[in-house]
Length: 341
Ligand code: P6P
Image (cartoon, rainbow, N blue to C red; front, side, top):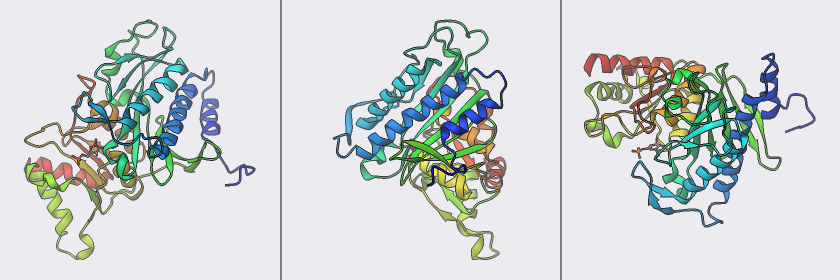
């Protein structure tokens, strides 16, 4: 990496260049994005050192989802509360780790945004060194709440189409920050010794179709006829030749499975089933942000019958089935569900 080359674009360069495109921009939105990036850099260091800091394993409590909270979950949640709170740009936050919405530390009547995040998704994979990630979605406060010095739940009850920014960080073989503000998707790789994110994946586009499906097939028997029929076609091919058969990849960490799908194409599915009709993944801080990303990259995200981005959360931890990935793959599973239920 040659920092003297004008071809090297840092995340800070990129964000300020975007800001310059908006005459009269005050810089608050740039501050929003930079505060998220700062949090993700701190969490990245924590994830890489967890084993040496005795930060592996359970924290000894269960979260609102009824899941075993991992020590790193608690750490990541506090890091984002601090870095996002200190920016002063957020009035309120929602975190997967907290039962209720909470006021941002420096939030006040001038704060224009709210943010929903999963501080560390896939944390059950932390101790086995599998990639994990952070997911976030940013919304402007509603006209009826903007200017108030009191946080309001209604700011989080907006459809995914109202997101002004969304993204994820994957803590893997490298740490990558991938986000959109509605003008395409760009990926940045952390240069750890410098502490800067460098633009490595400009204008990310998901392939129109892919030959990888990703789901936890252990639940196959619980899924609808349409989903089962679609999966059989992926596995058995269309009878023309071996090439029509798919490969299956499943990490069990949403950010890792999504990031691979975004780069290589195909489909990730977490369907609902008879036992859990809304599946496992959360709409506000997992599915809606990834749906914004995938649509900006030319793909699709549905709950089986509706566009994820059109859904409005009634409660902040609401779950939704998720089918996300290349346009043609999502079209095909949508058609199978329409035909077979
Ligand atoms: P299952 C991780 O716990 C997570 O929330 C997502 O990151 C992942 O996609 C999903 O659960 C895996 O769930 O039921 O396959 O273990």
